[in-house]
Picture (cartoon, rainbow, N blue to C red):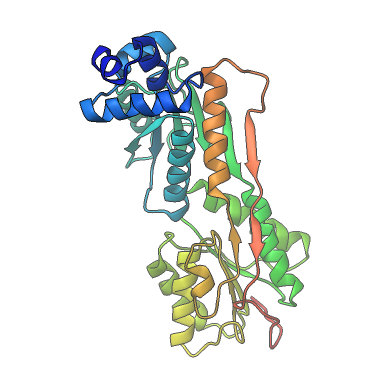
Length: 331
């Protein structure tokens, strides 16, 4: 720090203010200090900074399945929001959905000196609620940790309801559902809303078909659905499964949406360019990232008067993959 101060012609206190991103430094001085830092290869000592500020400047993120589109987008959004708040992000993947595995991941992140942790889709299969060290600020994103921690989630029920209501409103007698994995929190929420919407409308509730979020599982399910001439509408729990489903229907000689309307969930970037363009539910992951970081900072800074749960409402995007049925469906 003394070398940087000497090169920039400022005091060590000014270098400290720039290193800690304080606002009470004029632009020209800040540029001189930053230039000297770059020339000398200066990096702030995070341990020393933590002694002064009480922060390490890092968040941890724990997730089960980063192959899932929603989880990957949520992680990216958290990283973006953390960077805006001058925090970095350390990530730990968890293969088994047990409390022991999650606690091990959290302990590993704590050894890396993080200020708070986000759990993404934290469905724990072997315990009704998750207990973590009380000293560590925790936020749950899109999952169920026993409602013990501040929570950020999409309104999965509203999103699924909007899809099913849209298809029923087009005149389909009922809607088949290609659900996600049994152990996925978001998949269960979407399936429950699908069933409830059909029941409230007095529509038949067909048997569930489960996939694993992949286009391949949607394709396999689609081959079976294509053999049923009475199916006129399918709601897939994510866009990748909808993509595979549409291919299976096309290969089986079933037109989309002429014979079968198909809708998805997530609004992946490719959804608007499928053939036909996919009706789906759009989720704003950037808002989720900002809410997660905001809730962590509230805990770190001792603010206890804010909401402990923030819900983001998804938006139905209607495209050409859904239409009125040519004839009434029965399943």
